[in-house]
Length: 380
Image: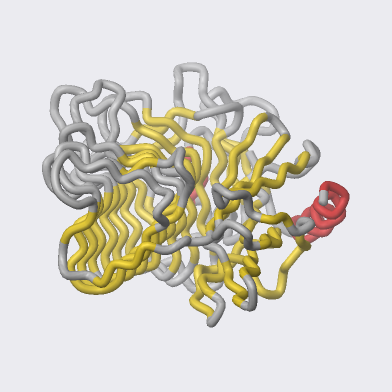
Protein backbone atom coordinates (compact mmCIF):
# COMPACT_ATOMS: atom_id res chain seq x y z
CA UNK A 1 0.00 0.00 0.00
CA UNK A 2 2.93 2.36 0.59
CA UNK A 3 3.96 2.14 -3.05
CA UNK A 4 0.38 2.73 -4.10
CA UNK A 5 0.19 5.81 -1.89
CA UNK A 6 3.42 7.14 -3.39
CA UNK A 7 2.08 6.74 -6.93
CA UNK A 8 -1.21 8.36 -6.00
CA UNK A 9 0.60 11.18 -4.24
CA UNK A 10 2.49 12.08 -7.38
CA UNK A 11 -0.83 12.45 -9.13
CA UNK A 12 -2.15 14.60 -6.30
CA UNK A 13 0.89 16.84 -6.50
CA UNK A 14 0.28 17.29 -10.21
CA UNK A 15 -3.32 18.26 -9.54
CA UNK A 16 -2.15 20.81 -7.00
CA UNK A 17 0.40 22.39 -9.32
CA UNK A 18 -2.03 25.02 -10.58
CA UNK A 19 -2.94 26.05 -7.04
CA UNK A 20 -0.94 28.46 -4.90
CA UNK A 21 0.70 28.16 -1.49
CA UNK A 22 0.99 31.28 0.66
CA UNK A 23 3.15 31.82 3.75
CA UNK A 24 2.14 33.82 6.83
CA UNK A 25 4.81 34.88 9.32
CA UNK A 26 4.88 38.03 11.45
CA UNK A 27 8.68 37.94 11.21
CA UNK A 28 8.55 38.75 7.50
CA UNK A 29 11.54 37.89 5.36
CA UNK A 30 12.16 36.00 2.17
CA UNK A 31 9.33 33.75 1.06
CA UNK A 32 6.76 35.33 3.38
CA UNK A 33 3.64 36.73 1.70
CA UNK A 34 1.54 38.05 4.61
CA UNK A 35 2.21 39.23 8.19
CA UNK A 36 -1.02 37.76 9.58
CA UNK A 37 -3.73 35.27 8.72
CA UNK A 38 -6.73 37.64 8.34
CA UNK A 39 -4.97 39.63 5.62
CA UNK A 40 -4.02 36.42 3.82
CA UNK A 41 -7.57 35.06 3.86
CA UNK A 42 -8.99 38.37 2.65
CA UNK A 43 -6.47 38.93 -0.14
CA UNK A 44 -8.17 38.86 -3.58
CA UNK A 45 -5.34 36.79 -5.10
CA UNK A 46 -5.83 34.05 -2.46
CA UNK A 47 -8.55 31.91 -4.03
CA UNK A 48 -10.39 28.62 -3.70
CA UNK A 49 -8.07 25.63 -3.61
CA UNK A 50 -5.09 27.57 -2.24
CA UNK A 51 -3.10 26.58 0.86
CA UNK A 52 -1.98 29.03 3.56
CA UNK A 53 0.96 27.98 5.77
CA UNK A 54 0.98 29.81 9.12
CA UNK A 55 4.22 30.03 11.12
CA UNK A 56 4.59 31.09 14.74
CA UNK A 57 5.93 34.66 14.81
CA UNK A 58 8.80 36.00 16.95
CA UNK A 59 6.38 37.20 19.66
CA UNK A 60 4.18 34.10 19.54
CA UNK A 61 2.00 35.53 16.79
CA UNK A 62 -0.10 32.90 15.10
CA UNK A 63 -3.64 32.74 13.79
CA UNK A 64 -6.19 35.49 14.49
CA UNK A 65 -9.94 35.48 13.84
CA UNK A 66 -11.31 35.98 10.34
CA UNK A 67 -14.47 35.51 8.25
CA UNK A 68 -14.43 33.73 4.89
CA UNK A 69 -16.44 31.78 2.35
CA UNK A 70 -13.38 30.57 0.42
CA UNK A 71 -12.37 26.94 0.00
CA UNK A 72 -8.94 27.23 1.60
CA UNK A 73 -6.57 24.90 3.44
CA UNK A 74 -4.94 26.62 6.42
CA UNK A 75 -2.05 24.72 8.05
CA UNK A 76 -0.15 25.49 11.24
CA UNK A 77 3.54 24.77 10.50
CA UNK A 78 5.99 23.28 12.96
CA UNK A 79 3.60 21.97 15.56
CA UNK A 80 0.63 23.63 17.20
CA UNK A 81 0.67 27.28 16.11
CA UNK A 82 -0.95 29.76 18.57
CA UNK A 83 -4.61 30.53 17.86
CA UNK A 84 -6.19 33.69 19.29
CA UNK A 85 -9.99 33.89 19.40
CA UNK A 86 -12.67 35.00 21.83
CA UNK A 87 -16.44 35.45 21.88
CA UNK A 88 -16.21 38.75 20.01
CA UNK A 89 -13.53 37.56 17.57
CA UNK A 90 -14.51 34.22 16.12
CA UNK A 91 -13.33 32.28 13.12
CA UNK A 92 -16.38 32.34 10.84
CA UNK A 93 -16.86 30.14 7.77
CA UNK A 94 -20.11 31.22 6.16
CA UNK A 95 -21.75 30.57 2.80
CA UNK A 96 -19.13 28.15 1.48
CA UNK A 97 -20.52 26.98 -1.89
CA UNK A 98 -21.03 23.33 -2.77
CA UNK A 99 -17.98 21.70 -4.34
CA UNK A 100 -15.52 23.68 -2.23
CA UNK A 101 -13.68 22.57 0.90
CA UNK A 102 -12.40 24.63 3.83
CA UNK A 103 -9.79 22.91 6.00
CA UNK A 104 -7.88 24.18 9.04
CA UNK A 105 -5.33 22.06 10.91
CA UNK A 106 -2.60 22.43 13.53
CA UNK A 107 -3.51 25.23 15.98
CA UNK A 108 -3.63 25.57 19.75
CA UNK A 109 -5.26 28.32 21.83
CA UNK A 110 -2.62 29.34 24.43
CA UNK A 111 -4.74 31.91 26.25
CA UNK A 112 -7.56 31.02 28.60
CA UNK A 113 -10.85 30.25 26.95
CA UNK A 114 -12.52 27.80 24.62
CA UNK A 115 -12.26 27.67 20.86
CA UNK A 116 -14.52 30.10 19.01
CA UNK A 117 -15.70 28.87 15.61
CA UNK A 118 -18.95 29.68 13.84
CA UNK A 119 -19.79 27.54 10.80
CA UNK A 120 -23.05 28.60 9.18
CA UNK A 121 -24.86 28.04 5.88
CA UNK A 122 -22.10 26.02 4.24
CA UNK A 123 -23.04 23.79 1.30
CA UNK A 124 -19.39 22.81 0.86
CA UNK A 125 -17.18 20.72 3.14
CA UNK A 126 -15.64 22.08 6.37
CA UNK A 127 -12.88 20.15 8.14
CA UNK A 128 -11.14 21.11 11.42
CA UNK A 129 -8.24 18.98 12.66
CA UNK A 130 -5.78 19.08 15.55
CA UNK A 131 -7.17 22.30 16.98
CA UNK A 132 -7.32 22.61 20.74
CA UNK A 133 -8.07 24.71 23.80
CA UNK A 134 -7.25 23.50 27.30
CA UNK A 135 -7.83 26.11 30.00
CA UNK A 136 -11.15 27.87 30.73
CA UNK A 137 -9.64 30.18 33.34
CA UNK A 138 -11.71 31.47 36.22
CA UNK A 139 -14.72 32.45 34.11
CA UNK A 140 -16.25 29.47 32.33
CA UNK A 141 -17.67 30.25 28.84
CA UNK A 142 -21.44 30.33 28.42
CA UNK A 143 -21.52 29.90 24.62
CA UNK A 144 -20.71 27.06 22.19
CA UNK A 145 -17.03 26.70 21.34
CA UNK A 146 -17.88 25.37 17.86
CA UNK A 147 -21.30 26.46 16.62
CA UNK A 148 -22.50 24.63 13.48
CA UNK A 149 -25.69 25.74 11.74
CA UNK A 150 -27.18 24.55 8.44
CA UNK A 151 -24.01 22.90 7.11
CA UNK A 152 -24.01 20.03 4.63
CA UNK A 153 -20.78 18.32 5.70
CA UNK A 154 -18.59 19.12 8.72
CA UNK A 155 -15.84 16.83 9.99
CA UNK A 156 -13.77 17.33 13.12
CA UNK A 157 -10.76 15.14 13.88
CA UNK A 158 -8.57 15.37 16.98
CA UNK A 159 -10.28 18.56 18.15
CA UNK A 160 -10.15 19.39 21.86
CA UNK A 161 -12.28 22.01 23.58
CA UNK A 162 -14.97 22.67 26.18
CA UNK A 163 -17.87 25.09 26.33
CA UNK A 164 -21.61 25.38 26.79
CA UNK A 165 -21.64 23.12 24.86
CA UNK A 166 -18.27 22.29 23.34
CA UNK A 167 -20.03 21.63 20.00
CA UNK A 168 -23.51 22.83 19.01
CA UNK A 169 -24.97 21.39 15.80
CA UNK A 170 -28.28 22.47 14.23
CA UNK A 171 -29.75 21.14 10.96
CA UNK A 172 -26.35 19.85 9.84
CA UNK A 173 -24.32 16.75 8.97
CA UNK A 174 -21.39 16.28 11.37
CA UNK A 175 -18.69 13.68 12.06
CA UNK A 176 -16.54 13.83 15.20
CA UNK A 177 -13.49 11.53 15.09
CA UNK A 178 -11.04 11.15 17.99
CA UNK A 179 -12.23 14.39 19.60
CA UNK A 180 -11.72 15.32 23.25
CA UNK A 181 -14.72 17.34 24.41
CA UNK A 182 -15.94 18.61 27.76
CA UNK A 183 -12.62 18.14 29.52
CA UNK A 184 -10.26 20.86 30.76
CA UNK A 185 -6.70 20.79 32.05
CA UNK A 186 -7.79 22.48 35.29
CA UNK A 187 -10.35 19.77 35.97
CA UNK A 188 -13.05 22.34 36.71
CA UNK A 189 -15.58 20.71 34.44
CA UNK A 190 -15.71 21.33 30.73
CA UNK A 191 -19.46 21.50 30.26
CA UNK A 192 -21.65 19.59 27.84
CA UNK A 193 -19.83 17.91 24.95
CA UNK A 194 -22.45 18.03 22.19
CA UNK A 195 -25.90 19.54 21.65
CA UNK A 196 -27.44 18.40 18.35
CA UNK A 197 -30.84 19.40 16.96
CA UNK A 198 -32.30 18.04 13.74
CA UNK A 199 -28.88 16.75 12.71
CA UNK A 200 -27.13 13.56 11.63
CA UNK A 201 -24.05 13.12 13.83
CA UNK A 202 -21.39 10.39 13.84
CA UNK A 203 -19.14 10.08 16.89
CA UNK A 204 -16.07 7.86 16.40
CA UNK A 205 -13.57 6.97 19.16
CA UNK A 206 -14.75 9.73 21.53
CA UNK A 207 -13.02 11.05 24.63
CA UNK A 208 -15.94 12.94 26.18
CA UNK A 209 -15.60 13.57 29.91
CA UNK A 210 -17.43 16.66 31.22
CA UNK A 211 -16.00 16.26 34.75
CA UNK A 212 -19.03 16.79 36.94
CA UNK A 213 -21.47 18.15 34.36
CA UNK A 214 -24.89 17.09 35.66
CA UNK A 215 -26.95 17.16 32.44
CA UNK A 216 -26.49 14.93 29.39
CA UNK A 217 -22.99 14.81 27.96
CA UNK A 218 -24.44 14.31 24.47
CA UNK A 219 -27.97 15.60 23.79
CA UNK A 220 -29.69 14.85 20.47
CA UNK A 221 -33.18 15.98 19.49
CA UNK A 222 -34.97 14.68 16.38
CA UNK A 223 -31.81 13.48 14.68
CA UNK A 224 -29.68 10.44 13.95
CA UNK A 225 -26.78 9.65 16.25
CA UNK A 226 -24.19 6.94 15.48
CA UNK A 227 -21.47 6.12 18.00
CA UNK A 228 -18.50 3.88 17.17
CA UNK A 229 -15.18 2.99 18.76
CA UNK A 230 -13.31 0.40 20.77
CA UNK A 231 -12.85 -0.19 24.49
CA UNK A 232 -10.22 2.58 24.80
CA UNK A 233 -12.76 5.26 23.89
CA UNK A 234 -14.93 7.03 26.48
CA UNK A 235 -18.30 8.74 26.57
CA UNK A 236 -18.68 9.55 30.24
CA UNK A 237 -21.79 10.83 31.93
CA UNK A 238 -19.63 13.01 34.18
CA UNK A 239 -22.11 13.81 36.90
CA UNK A 240 -25.14 12.81 34.84
CA UNK A 241 -26.24 10.80 31.81
CA UNK A 242 -23.92 10.07 28.86
CA UNK A 243 -26.66 10.41 26.20
CA UNK A 244 -30.06 12.09 26.23
CA UNK A 245 -31.88 11.53 22.93
CA UNK A 246 -35.45 12.60 22.25
CA UNK A 247 -36.92 11.65 18.88
CA UNK A 248 -34.92 10.19 16.04
CA UNK A 249 -32.55 7.22 16.08
CA UNK A 250 -29.47 6.24 18.08
CA UNK A 251 -27.01 3.48 17.12
CA UNK A 252 -24.31 2.63 19.67
CA UNK A 253 -21.46 0.15 19.46
CA UNK A 254 -21.55 -1.87 22.72
CA UNK A 255 -17.73 -1.69 22.88
CA UNK A 256 -17.79 2.06 23.67
CA UNK A 257 -17.62 2.60 27.47
CA UNK A 258 -20.39 4.90 28.71
CA UNK A 259 -20.04 5.15 32.49
CA UNK A 260 -23.02 6.77 34.20
CA UNK A 261 -23.05 7.69 37.92
CA UNK A 262 -26.69 6.72 38.20
CA UNK A 263 -29.28 5.20 35.92
CA UNK A 264 -29.00 3.97 32.33
CA UNK A 265 -26.42 5.41 29.93
CA UNK A 266 -29.11 6.52 27.44
CA UNK A 267 -32.40 8.22 28.25
CA UNK A 268 -35.14 9.87 26.18
CA UNK A 269 -37.67 8.87 23.54
CA UNK A 270 -35.34 8.05 20.63
CA UNK A 271 -35.22 4.53 19.21
CA UNK A 272 -31.94 3.06 20.49
CA UNK A 273 -30.10 0.13 18.91
CA UNK A 274 -26.94 -1.40 20.37
CA UNK A 275 -25.07 -2.83 17.40
CA UNK A 276 -21.57 -2.98 15.93
CA UNK A 277 -20.98 0.34 14.15
CA UNK A 278 -18.14 -0.06 11.61
CA UNK A 279 -15.81 2.94 11.59
CA UNK A 280 -12.22 4.10 11.02
CA UNK A 281 -9.92 6.54 12.75
CA UNK A 282 -6.24 7.43 12.46
CA UNK A 283 -3.26 7.94 14.69
CA UNK A 284 0.24 8.97 13.67
CA UNK A 285 3.81 8.75 14.96
CA UNK A 286 6.15 10.67 12.68
CA UNK A 287 5.56 9.49 9.13
CA UNK A 288 3.82 6.31 10.26
CA UNK A 289 0.05 6.47 9.95
CA UNK A 290 -2.09 3.84 11.64
CA UNK A 291 -5.64 3.40 10.39
CA UNK A 292 -7.78 1.55 12.93
CA UNK A 293 -11.09 -0.03 11.98
CA UNK A 294 -13.89 -1.54 14.02
CA UNK A 295 -16.51 -4.01 12.86
CA UNK A 296 -18.25 -7.14 14.10
CA UNK A 297 -15.86 -9.97 15.09
CA UNK A 298 -15.35 -12.39 12.21
CA UNK A 299 -16.00 -9.78 9.52
CA UNK A 300 -13.44 -8.87 6.86
CA UNK A 301 -12.37 -5.26 6.34
CA UNK A 302 -11.12 -3.74 3.09
CA UNK A 303 -9.67 -0.32 3.98
CA UNK A 304 -9.98 2.24 1.19
CA UNK A 305 -7.98 5.43 0.67
CA UNK A 306 -9.06 8.34 -1.50
CA UNK A 307 -9.75 12.04 -1.82
CA UNK A 308 -12.22 13.43 0.73
CA UNK A 309 -15.75 14.06 -0.43
CA UNK A 310 -18.85 15.39 1.29
CA UNK A 311 -20.53 13.10 3.80
CA UNK A 312 -23.16 11.38 1.69
CA UNK A 313 -25.78 8.76 2.51
CA UNK A 314 -25.71 5.68 0.26
CA UNK A 315 -27.48 2.28 0.39
CA UNK A 316 -24.30 0.82 1.93
CA UNK A 317 -23.86 3.55 4.55
CA UNK A 318 -22.18 6.94 4.83
CA UNK A 319 -19.65 7.72 2.08
CA UNK A 320 -16.80 10.12 2.88
CA UNK A 321 -14.53 9.52 -0.13
CA UNK A 322 -15.00 11.23 -3.47
CA UNK A 323 -16.45 8.41 -5.62
CA UNK A 324 -14.37 9.58 -8.60
CA UNK A 325 -11.06 9.59 -6.66
CA UNK A 326 -10.63 6.21 -4.98
CA UNK A 327 -6.87 5.65 -4.72
CA UNK A 328 -6.79 2.00 -3.67
CA UNK A 329 -7.43 -0.57 -0.97
CA UNK A 330 -5.36 -2.21 1.72
CA UNK A 331 -5.30 -6.00 1.75
CA UNK A 332 -8.35 -7.31 3.64
CA UNK A 333 -7.97 -8.14 7.31
CA UNK A 334 -10.16 -10.35 9.47
CA UNK A 335 -11.62 -8.68 12.53
CA UNK A 336 -10.25 -9.86 15.85
CA UNK A 337 -12.43 -11.22 18.62
CA UNK A 338 -12.44 -7.68 19.99
CA UNK A 339 -13.75 -6.32 16.67
CA UNK A 340 -10.64 -4.25 15.86
CA UNK A 341 -8.13 -4.33 12.99
CA UNK A 342 -5.34 -1.91 12.03
CA UNK A 343 -3.29 -1.03 8.94
CA UNK A 344 -0.05 0.96 9.12
CA UNK A 345 1.53 2.83 6.22
CA UNK A 346 4.63 4.95 5.84
CA UNK A 347 3.52 8.31 4.45
CA UNK A 348 6.10 9.77 2.04
CA UNK A 349 7.76 12.82 3.61
CA UNK A 350 7.83 14.62 0.25
CA UNK A 351 4.07 15.10 0.14
CA UNK A 352 3.04 18.76 0.38
CA UNK A 353 1.47 20.19 3.51
CA UNK A 354 -2.26 20.59 3.18
CA UNK A 355 -2.85 17.49 1.08
CA UNK A 356 -6.05 15.83 2.32
CA UNK A 357 -7.03 12.17 2.32
CA UNK A 358 -10.00 10.15 3.48
CA UNK A 359 -9.96 6.56 4.67
CA UNK A 360 -12.96 4.31 4.96
CA UNK A 361 -13.58 0.64 5.63
CA UNK A 362 -15.67 -1.63 3.46
CA UNK A 363 -16.92 -4.39 5.74
CA UNK A 364 -17.93 -7.84 4.53
CA UNK A 365 -19.83 -9.72 7.21
CA UNK A 366 -21.25 -12.88 5.68
CA UNK A 367 -23.49 -11.75 2.82
CA UNK A 368 -23.74 -8.21 4.20
CA UNK A 369 -21.60 -5.44 2.64
CA UNK A 370 -21.41 -2.19 4.59
CA UNK A 371 -19.43 1.06 4.58
CA UNK A 372 -17.80 2.03 7.85
CA UNK A 373 -17.89 5.61 9.08
CA UNK A 374 -14.99 7.49 7.34
CA UNK A 375 -12.15 9.61 8.65
CA UNK A 376 -10.59 12.64 6.91
CA UNK A 377 -7.03 13.80 7.65
CA UNK A 378 -4.71 16.52 6.36
CA UNK A 379 -0.92 16.20 5.99
CA UNK A 380 0.97 18.81 7.97
